[in-house]
Amino acid sequence: MRKHFIALMMVLMIFLIILSVGIAGCSSKSPSTSPVIQPARTSSTPNDPNAFRTAIPTTPTPLPTPTSKPVPKFGRGDIVAYKPVTQETESLYIVLDYDSKNDGYDVTFIHRNDDGSWGHWTFTSTDYYFEREKFEKNYKAPDTWIYGHIDPDTVSCEIPKDPDAAKFFKCAR
Image (cartoon, rainbow, N blue to C red; front, side):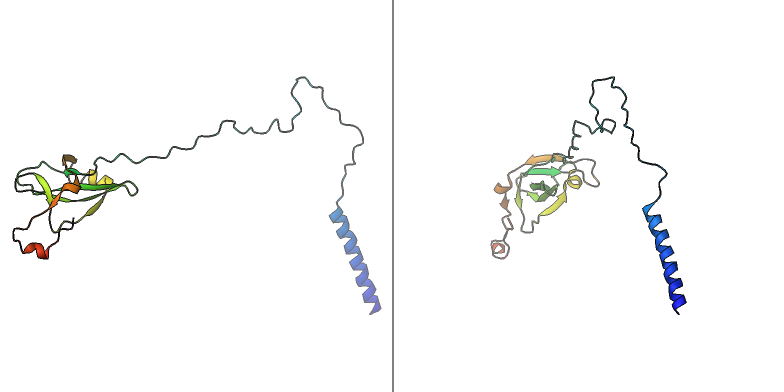
């Protein structure tokens, strides 16, 4: 048993010696003791170790300009038509507001008065929201235009033909 122990210790010692030589490494180069001779300078530029590296541009790259949304075609109070208006046309869209944050229009219908002018809401008037691009160019119409203009705050509510109807219907506006 003692022979096995000694043999094992010898193998371990040889292994450690080989390992330490492998880790330390062997080099065929010996350190030079002679001084390094620099070539003579022919220009007046300083010896800059970074001289041949890629230079960083001195002019900052401009940031891309953010694309702005197109200016809205319609404003508050514009009465919008998608086709020619005739005597039979009873209602058109009126722009209540342009929402720049969401790029869309709040609209409702404005109805023709008995005298032919434009200017009353009905009891069933409802507000609608349209994206700007879709509202400015209706799906079927080639173009849209402003037929007229009226301040939405001055538009009155439809007067019921039956006086008792006012008790049951309140104008939303």
